[in-house]
Amino acid sequence: LKKLEYKTCTFGMSSFITQACPLNYSPLCGNDGNTYPNECALCVHRMETNADVLIVKEGRC
Image 1: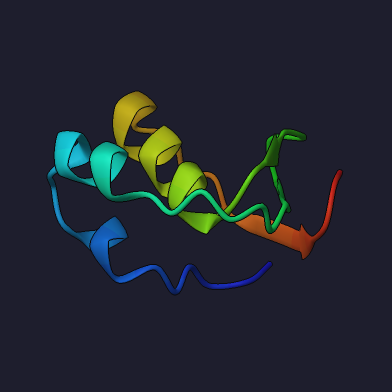
Image 2: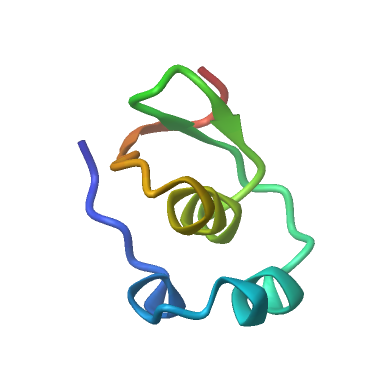
């Protein structure tokens, strides 16, 4: 499992993050079995659901 590097993931402002996520496609596989378009999207999912999702690998699941 990889540590999340996205700095704003630690801030408690999901609405700010949603607007600030880059559009680049750099897929990541989460330990929940879902593929996220980039690390920011994974962070948003964590904040919106309070899920403890971590990166399993780079690329699609």
